Length: 401
Image 1 (cartoon, rainbow, N blue to C red):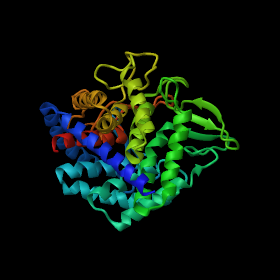
Image 2: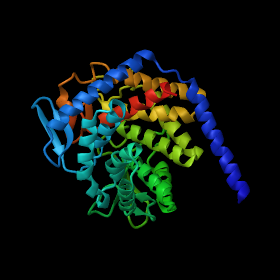
Image 3: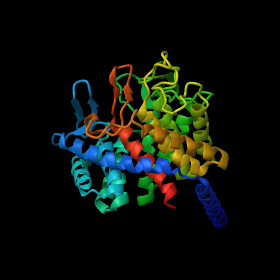
């Protein structure tokens, strides 16, 4: 046993040594760093504008420029964690106390969701918010909120299926979406702070089942897998937010890229690194990926090159690539780093970055939420802002070490 532990520690040290060595080889661009400084300044002013327009207890969803209307939600909406999370990430850079005050106000509203067992999105809702504030001020209260959130999320796991249920249904079906990979980080946190390995095991089992059933031979992902709740067999593979059942919905590919990168970070199992790299190659080798790396809302949208772009998918990709580059070999690491740099540069351009005082207070323009239902089309979205700020934060970190 001691030999196994020792060999495991040596392996971990090797991984981190390699990651740190490659980290030194990534050269940040001064012009991009200058853009990022301006991005933070804009983000600070935009979110102070946004906070002035929110009704008590409401979270921002999107802004409709044609009607000059802010659309909001209650705390139970899957995106509720992104607003306080973005406030906190901007605060870490600007130290603007108004943002911290607003974030704490929203965290108080959100805290009751720790007991919400009706959603699989507690990772988005609680880890992107309370997980972020823990990095600033680690408190027992917030730790308990996150542990309870992980317990609530775990209640949706069925060992017969091997997955956490995404959407409830009155039909004989068990629905799992690729987005659910993003909620597993909460479970890893819970194991770290409690020592209870059950959270870890659920995350690994879910990721393994998803890897087996959600991906095509080219490593593009289906959006939805419908399992037989009695047998665990796959009944159907389809889309909900993509163009068609067999198309590659852009944000879904980004969720997978990010999710399996996190899986490798938390387990150091190379099969997850390989999965993340395979997804990356599908994205980067796709003939429908534009030169500016801001993807169309679906890689198989029928009206390419006139299809709408999705800044939210681009933001998730950029953040994921800036972590994945640390773990991959130097050739691919450089490719991922430069791709993220290109995305940041282009999202920081007037084409996607809002002008001060516009866009309802959101940072980025031109995201696509749910094209088939004609909801949130070519508008700002809270998760586009969240992952964009996370991406520029990660890029800056390469210049500061």
